[in-house]
Image (cartoon, rainbow, N blue to C red; front, top):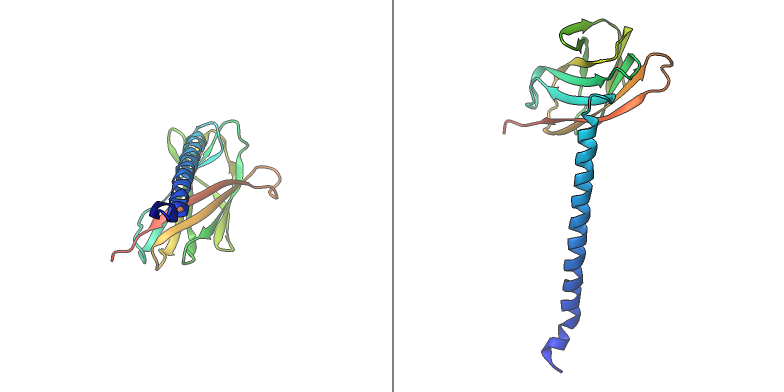
Amino acid sequence: MNPIWKHLPIITTLFAVSFSTIDITRSFASLTNENKEVNSESQNQNYLSLVSVRASEITARARNTKYYFTINIPKSSRPLRKVNIVQRGGFDIVKFNLNQTKAYAINNTRKEIKITETKPELNGQSVTFDPPVESGQKLTLVMGVRENPQNDGNYLFEVTVFPEGKLEMGQSLGIGRLRITSMF
């Protein structure tokens, strides 16, 4: 028997795997392009959206850090009465300092918004405004953190808003990510 025929099953398997890898790569490329379109669309000024999540200090174990959550409230939206921020991922639980929560409305100028209530939620915090935050501007919540997580990694926060009216029905704006880094 010719030695080439002995290796034929291996050769055909490798050939099939190489074609399936090309198809998988194309699938991932198309998914990435779709995600880019969705992300760029959500940054549009006409949508109620989570614009950014950032921290004043991203080093693990840094004390008295501030986390900033910026939300776009378009003119077509109803005013916001309440915002919930809940941690959905990360190795450690972030502990917010309720007394260090502030809110700012940013249109042409930055104006502090009155917070009527801050309550701890399971792995997060809720912030209530009275009067509600008007549409046609950006809202930035500044939330104090006692200490950044001990472990580095990605920390995920889901942001849910509650428009004026019935508070039972919230609208999730998605997940914001903070990358905490280690000095070592």
